[in-house]
Length: 278
Image (cartoon, rainbow, N blue to C red):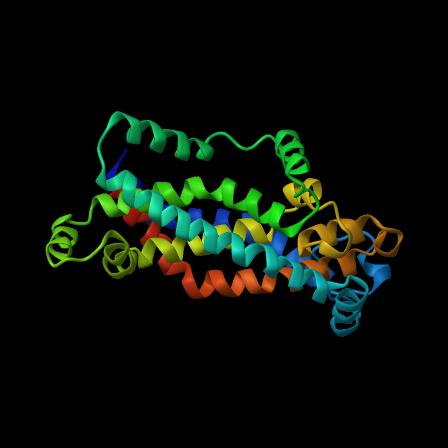
């Protein structure tokens, strides 16, 4: 390849990547945004055209009221927040053990724990186990499912990060008479802040937008989360062909996660590289 062609390719490659990303992400976002501001007659067949008559206020008001978004928002918080806390606490404790102890049993346990990265849980088996435990259709059952699903990711990133931390820090504290719990709380956890931030954001994003497992575990009713509530109202007579209300619901439901991602995107990259590369 001539030098001139290589120079053009080197300069044009970033522009091409940005263009493809804009098409893959920007076009769906634009479709959702403009459709959510259209009246029902214009939104019957969603397209990329601007609304001839704007009515975003009425659409979002109907989505909030008729879609029972406030109740769904509260249900999502009651499920997602405990799940994130359990994933962080259990993942950090397990990662500390896996990173500091060396034996065949520990290696086998680590491989078993991170196998969840490749092997998704079988939903039928999960539901049957929850029914045996009396947790089917309950928030504790949903919390248990999310914790089990995302614990592997937390353990994987945190173990890689702790292995890069000099063990002399812990040995010095141990010589000063510090107990394991004190070492974990005062030394290990503060060092894990980048990975904890990443795990928090990733688990929150996944659990907040989940509808598949929520459908089988919670089933609906008063405990429906935001995505599950959207799935049900979108299939009901109320939202039949009312794409302006469906997309308005999607926009409002996505705003908290978009805000979290924009604020903490640097922490996501930092935590992933720290846990996986080190």
